[in-house]
Image (cartoon, rainbow over all chains, first blue to last red; front, side):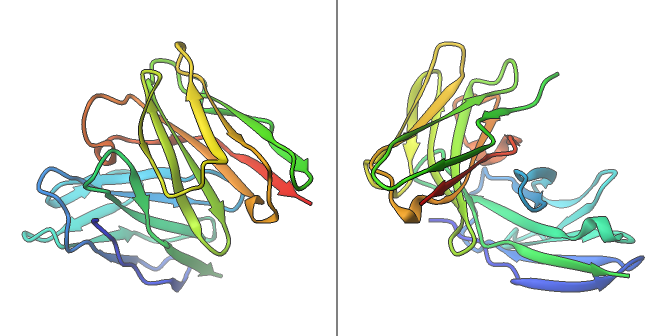
Length: 110
Length: 117
């Protein structure tokens, strides 16, 4: 069973860059690395996905080293509205179920 | 394009009752997954359906069941409710080709908040 490990919580200030690292030692060869964001009382929302090296979109960047055993989500210049839980995902290698880890609770302060 | 719609948004039941939750996926999506979210256990996978077939199931008792209709809409049912079933139940849809669902973008609804008294 592929599992992910992330820090439980992180604090930051507005305008700072935030980097959240996830370890996924048993990631399968064909699996992508996917991150979601969740606000209270809402469903998670897709942020970014990548396979290797670096991926960037309008919201975040994702850095993946060559061994793919970890990944780092980078949020540039965070604002108060980025306060949320961020999940790094893995796939249960026995089937089609996507496993959410405990997530990282990011708190952005003014 | 309309997003994933879950009904009802809030539900209050008493122990021993049963409940049915509904999920309408994004048009064209054929895979629907269900998750239970509680403060203590986080997001836990319940089951996934693709083309009316259950592809996989999480580690929940048989009281939790689901189904998918030919139009991809899905329902989940919980029978003999227990206090511990109080949670936010989330539905997610994706295109759902045969293969690894983690590589597909999941679109979540806002969930049904179930309270069991």
